[in-house]
Amino acid sequence: MRASKRPGLTRQTLIDTGLRLLDDVGLEGLTVRRLAAELGVQSPALYWHVRTKQELLDGMADAIVRAAGMGPPRDGEPWQEWLTRRARAYRASLLAHRDGARVVVNARQLSLEATRMFDDELTAMVGCGFTPVLALRTITAVSHYVTGFVLQEQSVPREQADTPQDRLAALADVLEGGASATLLRAVREGGPPLGEDAFEHGLRTLVNGTAAALSGP
Image 1 (tube, rainbow, N blue to C red):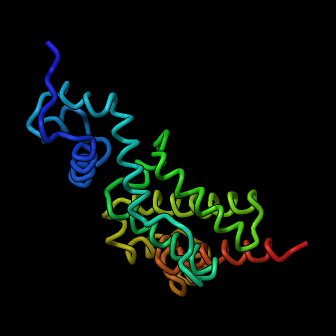
Image 2 (image 1 turned 60 degrees about the horizontal axis):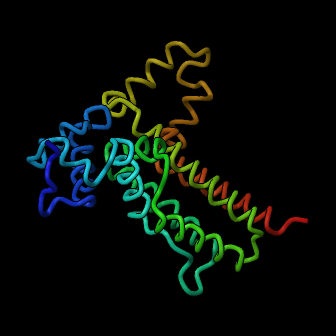
């Protein structure tokens, strides 16, 4: 007999609970059965709201993306500041959830609302002098950069993140220049390659490159 629809159980409830479970058990541990148990229902009850686990993950990805605050620049906000702000907010939203970047990368479809907001952003960029193609390529490049950066951040084992000096000492033992090797000097002077400064450098490079493309012939 088909499970009856439980009052109060909604698609948004499933997505919110899925995100909470994601933080607790990670993407590998998130299953439909575990989600149902968390909600106090049998698995078939969930299929009134999401037909597959992929559909649930798509909804979770959509929530993460939209939580970053999509939308065109504020009144009087230069596109460079808007794009930088948008990228930082997107990174923060991905980092807010364990395996957040993996969830977004594996999404197959975002909501119509997110798609409309994305189109609004592109339209605003065209108003700032971009061609539609340059607008799309720019925001796609920045989004891919942020997602890839966070994927690496979230894939670093905690024990590695907690012992940077030990790892540097181990590298010094195998590099020809020892403690004075170029790689170690770069890390000592500029911080780790996945640090805040590294992220800002890459983002600044993308924004500056876009400005050059926009003003070029």
